[in-house]
Image (tube, rainbow, N blue to C red):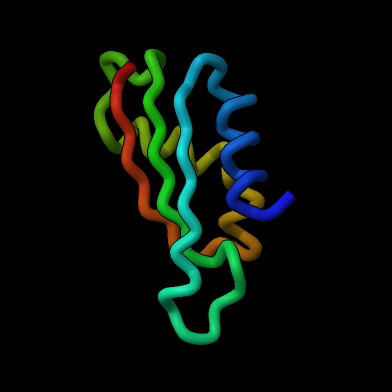
Amino acid sequence: MNIAEKVKQKIENALPGSDVSVHDESAGHADHEPGAHLEVSVTYAGFEGKPLLAQHRMITEILRDELQGIVHALRLHTKVK
């Protein structure tokens, strides 16, 4: 399983009922390993009533280990389902 698939699965497991897409943008950056730059979109009913910053914090908390490892750039898009 590559890092994009792992990230997608991890978010879906933590946020049941969410719709998640992950795109690895690392190839567009010189000398970066696969998974270093990710674009993540999450649609989730549990975001209802939460400000954008809180939504993003939910995702970064889920991905804490990855953000301390291979992933060093994360572009997030969150939306209420």
